[in-house]
Length: 326
Image 1: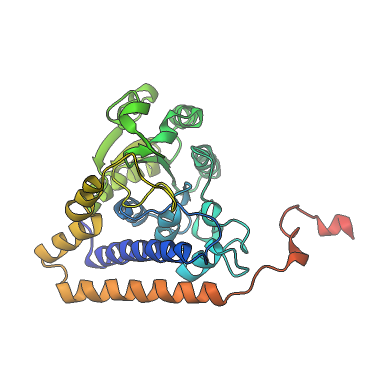
Image 2: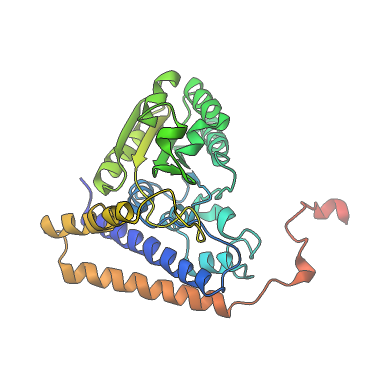
């Protein structure tokens, strides 16, 4: 049973992610954002559904399409937007840009531009938690393409052998850049690969918050009980291109429109919340409007923020033991 306040948090978080992404796209189109970005719009149910069950002390690792995970794990929109714009007020002082945002205070060990790069990092965090004897859990978010990387298979095997407290969450959005999953992956459901590592695997509708939440809740409980890892595959769909300049010649406009109109995770959740009587349409509208305002304010904060000072370009690059230096 999900409490009313938890449902509110999930709906709010999904809207924060959606409007943050759309604002980032707008800034890119205005040439106010350095480089391209990989946007998460359309996949919000996965990040919000999983992170609704995590605490600040629990860990996540993210991907090149990582803004949604960062926000769901507690990132401030203004600091995140400033990081996208390379400003000094960003989470990593403008050094990371879109694909490497991290916030250790919230257990976010970082997004990662390398496909599959975050999976072993999360596995290491889970090992640390087990060695320390804490009840922390690690979650690794990754895409369908990463399930074909060696880091995926090595990490799942190691996590299973040592019964590590980790949940592997595959966001299968149908494409690896422009290649359909059916042309790159040998199995219909990536979750079946769990069998080779003697762990539970489940495939769920990644656009159904309740389905994601239920699967994640069971997996996290299993991890905390010392029973080891779980592989969850969430089938979802990105509304926008692989990156902000993607011509998207590999899929039709009608396909994208169908997903936006009939399978949008925010629309689906909104309809369920109204149908079950948890919130009224006006209450949900207010949550959405607040998210739009927050995204606008984050953009303004980032635009007004200072550029990094070149004099400090080497700061945080090397560790310096001050006692030794003295």
